[in-house]
Length: 399
Ligand code: PLP
Image (cartoon, rainbow, N blue to C red):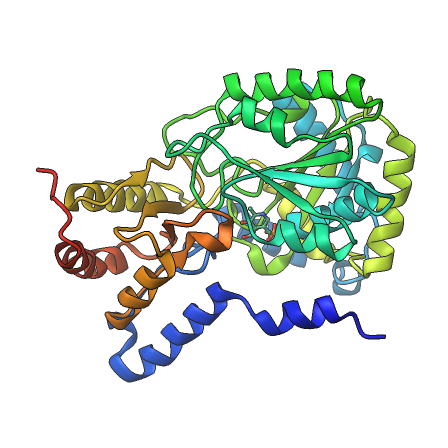
């Protein structure tokens, strides 16, 4: 029998892609420079120089058939070793080579971990606003995703809401900071409070509650804002990292997940993760790209361009009278829509070839997400359209 739930999801499409495709069609009609596309969270700046240097070095020193061969399903040993050493050195949480599993970005880690931690029963929870794929991961293994509200307007953790949302069958919290879609970085105080709450609830419920830290944006922060390393404050945390965003390598599909040595049920989670990786077919991440990425671990693309975009866009939009959440990181700006129906605002903006994504897709109506990983020129060209809309909606400019 064909899974009708998957059929329905497949048919429902993805609103971000839909709007982006509309933009591509419009570009053919009015010219690409007249379409202001803020829909897709794909890096627009080149990878750091070390990526190209490492590629050249590997090509010059490693026979081609070795560089392009299958990697072990779990990842190359020397790559796992280097990732473990890096995490231990940087965050002070001790990892060994065998604690690291190489993945196709954090997507694989999320799909695998939701399968492993939820298939036997139990549900997942996340905080709004959130990356929409979390729901797919949870529901596709027959589980559910509970959306826990955060503090309005700041999107920091609301611990009372978290306590209300937790239930005896909560097995897993998916955390994402810096956040897609808001750009918010979760503050230490709230996270330490959450860690205490989870420790209490684990005892009360008599089973572990795991945090899966989805952190593809960890290295994209602009004002020195601290990004708390969750495994350092809560032992049942599995850290998931990706080279997609900070190193501008989304197409190469490289990342890793790290299991702390004192994780509850470590052996079962490790073995089941290896099995799930095989079962999903997420095996053997590119040998060459594992080696390139790991040799550059810690380097980032020139993120000063994103910072410049963030400053310009946030400054201009708030001056026009829009309300935006100040984004400390990632490359997203979450803006309150001047009418409650965010989708209606998106459609109105689309008429002027300004493409943004409704917050409803992220569990947070009344907002739109702007992916500002675009060239600074796109922002400059788009500002008059934002201004025109602000005037049409009668927003009061802040001088
Ligand atoms: N998690 C979040 C919050 C994201 O925004 C994305 C991609 O946009 C992913 C995970 C998946 O990224 P990747 O699999 O490329 O690491």
